Image (cartoon, rainbow, N blue to C red; front, side, top):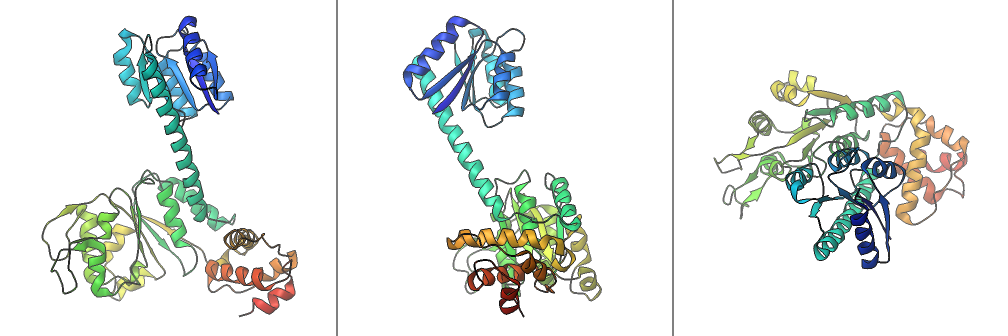
Length: 387
């Protein structure tokens, strides 16, 4: 059932619109407001799938209603109702985010077509929002320790900007989760998030992977291929384990960051790119610089914002939350109910030395869910979580 609000000060036109909508589809639940103030009050108190709003009204005109509604409930589509003298204003409302406008007196076919299209768009927007929430849940940062709270606060401040971020921390601490959160909370969230594991790509192939190549650039280059910088255009490029990147590739990355353009291997043609770079490493880059394995100028380009992810041993108070989170997630993945852990079992796990960090904890939780009793006990932990 679609819920529609009609905001129109002329009672005759309002009644016509309500009647047309109800006759068109019995599932339409249509409500009325005779001015902008009343309309906004209804919007604050209730959820609507669509609003039809007149432009010229006393007390508060349609433009003001639209602007306030976009702030309150930006997902609700607005169809503006314009008189012959309001066409310029109607076009202005489109720029402000209105879905469309119809002229008075309303053409029946155009009105109903526009209503159906607006409702279809609302369904699509809601579906996309649900999908985005589902995706975001996969990269949720779990924890209330001071270190994690600090990271969350930094992400909230940094994400809306285009500042480059260097994330440091040991293996398994969740550096990639921080990178995903930066992307998803940024203005680039609808564009690609492209990940490159610099440690997993042979040094002789890293430049081709990042910048692409043209046919014939080397023996196996049988066709032109775009690189990761191009793939991430308008989005975020995550360079994981950048401390393992070769010096020659570092030089090209530095140029890309300085000039916002790349050239494919075997080509001298420049390609402009608009990419936000987030990098991560488990190495001490200052030490790598001192020993000649990492470029200092690249480090300063990347480390505009520095975020360090603490080891799990530094945030043991988060272990109960992480166990609960992993238990639910593993249960969901395997189609079984989440398995409870006794307080004693959790306390015992908090005492362990987690050299493998979050990754190791997740593996242990999965092992205990599979091998442990109906409630994971301290004995289960001693039997199956020992190293």
